[in-house]
Length: 107
Image (cartoon, rainbow, N blue to C red; front, side, top):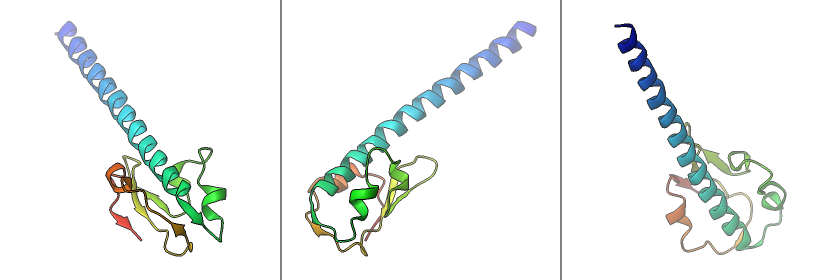
């Protein structure tokens, strides 16, 4: 029984490790896609009088800390965008909503 218990515990530990690595890889890819998509949106904005995006939306700040962006837990995907009070002018990229697959609220 000693070896069987050890083997089962080892197998469970390896399975858990696989799950954690797989989950974190997916999260990284998805949040990177969200970041790229929002940076593309930022590039399409021609006027933003309050300069909130210029100073806050950058690769040096976590996307979940960007002004107007809300991320969900535990997946850390963008679930809401609140840009309504920023007085932005520009175009929304046609594929933005395809890439922000976790987005639930946009205003």
